View 1 (tube, rainbow, N blue to C red):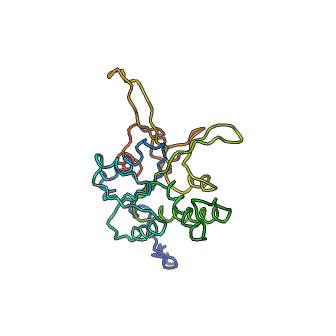
View 2: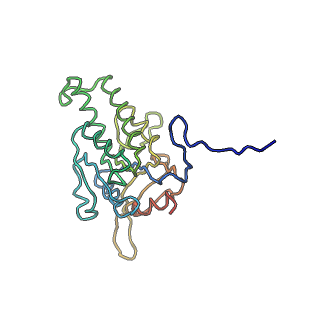
View 3: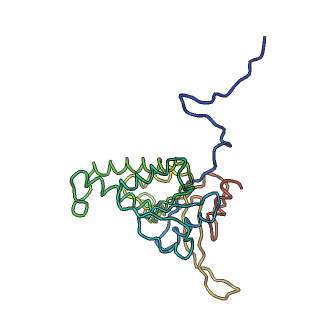
Length: 253
């Protein structure tokens, strides 16, 4: 009996099939920190990585001045409404778009932007009225959709977020996690491949004989901090990180 050769189908239901190694390598990262830590500058350092440049920074916070003297080649676009944000996402979903990396600065502000949009659409004034259960439900669904849709863009994706330090009601321990409101706070860490906590640490330098400020990235969870590295390629603690070193280690270059 003749042996039949097993062939991998080219597609299923019109969806193309490809080996994992054939997919263009991209990363998606959520970086959260206190204001002034340097998360925008760290994100902007992607412009120095050939595989990640050119970079578009979607500015929701209105805080791009830190890039002027560090990474001036980063393109920025100021967004002040939810429809504007979706229009940018539609452009980036085209595989022929100009950019290799997009930075959303910040996701914490995007959640507010969406809440205001939903409330105004319902005929409410978000400056005078509190959000109700219906508003929170719509906000949760919108944020789930947005983060998943941007995660699946055909380019590298970086989201920034503020730091939330909340006390766990069961243990009494203060937990560090990305700052969001409502149920989305508990869900966000499951969506990106990478979630990093970025912080400053004062340390005495024996050679300089003075205190120096170190910038540190935590890539794996501890008892009181949320973080993860789905690539499995990063050390738990990285001092003075750049997107160059992160990209090379995560992708394996």
